[in-house]
Image (tube, rainbow, N blue to C red; front, top):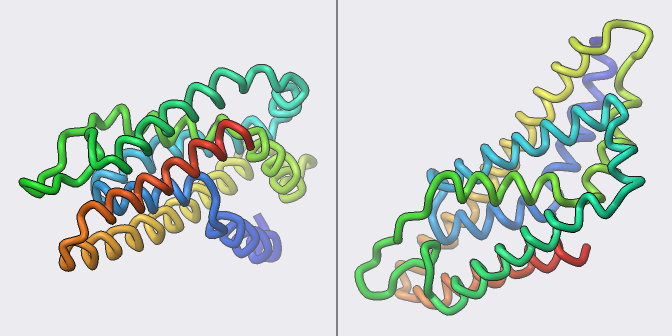
Amino acid sequence: MSATVLSVFIPTFFMVSITPGMCMTLALSLGISIGVRRTLWMMAGELLGVALVATLSAVGVATLMLEHPELFILLKYGGGAYLLYLGIQLWLSRGKLAFAEVNDRLQSTSRFALASQGFVTAIANPKGWAFFIALLPPFIDYATPVVPQLLTLVSLILLLEFACLLIYASGGRTMRQVLLQQGKVRLLNRIAGAMMIVVALWLAVG
């Protein structure tokens, strides 16, 4: 791919990724509640979802998905309801994601559950599909082999997305450390819970 195309593609998709959205808010929330290292499992699921959406958008399958929005209903409402439940639990300082006020230990949250949160959040938003349909195809030259171009572009998208997720999760971890030093554990849980509730409502009604 030409350097000219990449010089436009990279800053464009970086600005798109760094803009606050459902996945970035989720990364910030989990960075607060469970730290960056365990949030990596959510990121893995989210990146898998982004790769799927980007690839299908480039080959045109996403158009069919957008023409049948009922396909998103179960994912949107199911995923939103689950994240809402987790957010409420965090707000109440309960559940597996909440930071304990007594023994300062986090309960165990399965890696699969974290990855599933990221995956569902990435693929259950029709606006995300519409976004990739609008921005990704113009960067592909369909007169030349598409697969190498697609691999390059999707790889760059995932790299940029991962970097932005790390930025948000690290910001959450910093907030967590400050609040814990001040002994404000309940406030810590409530901030993380509120953010997750926002993501849940965004996913369900957006």
